[in-house]
Image (cartoon, rainbow, N blue to C red; front, side, top):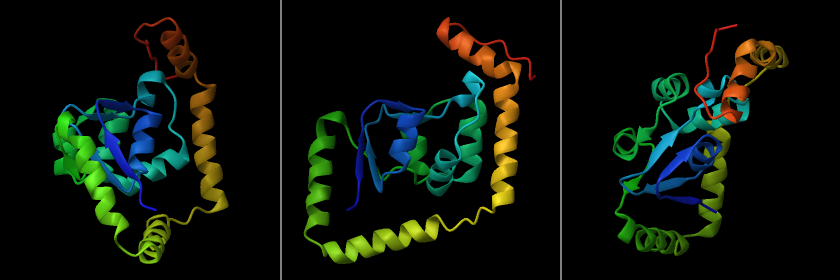
Length: 165
């Protein structure tokens, strides 16, 4: 079944990834989307990256990952990341109406089309060699000083002082 995400406020990190996994997104004007592992000194997981690049244009994914700054709802709408912006007072009724309009259509047809879209958008072959190379790159981060600095800064509620090592 299609998953409709109703976003009020900001979604950061894993919550942003969950939102990007939805089929349809409706957000309030104050919504924002952020992926912030660079602020913590950690790499983002491969499954999460695939979810993001299947939903967000690659230059925007790069900006979100590298700058770790929130993407406002109006920009997300302009980029086609979200479907609609609705005021908080109207969003719930709008989402219910959309769900009702989907429910009157053929469940079998919708199910097959959703699976076809999932298969087509996840058709990125990842060889064992490429997977190992990526894992090796991720291990560089985990073995580096910046990783521990990110964890320490998060725990101490301070800005990290990354050295690039």
